Image (cartoon, rainbow, N blue to C red; front, side):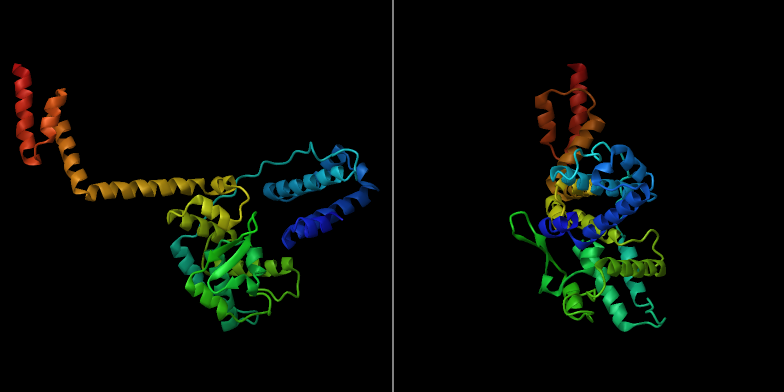
Length: 339
């Protein structure tokens, strides 16, 4: 019943439904071993014992705990349980996922390796290489997650516009595709009349797993250390930040519900963009003839006129040309000593 609620009412994506279903199956197996017959048998202590059987990493366990708490919150609201036993459950503090965009050199290596990637028979498959190249480019230039690219529908693309999702007001959020990517999708050898990268016959979870293994082999061939699909999303975001695209717009393209999520993961690159801005301004001031002259005057003042001049004397000095500044400054210092 809860899965139907998530699927129909909340419109959750298939990967999310799959993870909730995994949690359901795990709870059922645990309940059979412990001879628990109803939800009310899941007390805080029982749920803590259930947690002890989780052997995944800190991040995976924290996400599983979020789903468990969400389920029991709804169970309490629907009066399926008398109390919410998961409310006080504690979990690990997962380390923040590092933001690791690919360098442009790494992207070039990945795309070069595509042509060398073997098909299942061990031969170089032209169709597979074309499809893999389009998949990589879609990940890189849309910022979409691997599950969303795998299930990308043909009707989502209109020319060079890719429909991402409907915003809170119902207005569509679209991504403009580079022309080479739009062309690659148009010429793609398709596996289905509905999807670009999925037959639609298997579960989406299975299809994503196949693409993840394919990318793993591609990264190995390209000699990319710590290569995984989410790094394309990082690359998309960071390159836009460095191109001075406002972070609010990037947050919309990524589909984040709150801009603070975007800031959390990409704040170091916001600072890098600020550094880039400061260097650009510094370069602009050096090329500005007025700024250059004023800077030279200020440097000469610091070097040759350490004494405290009166305001009028400083104005008079700054009105001089750089050629006469040194001589006049020396005369001012002399007149102050004998004054």
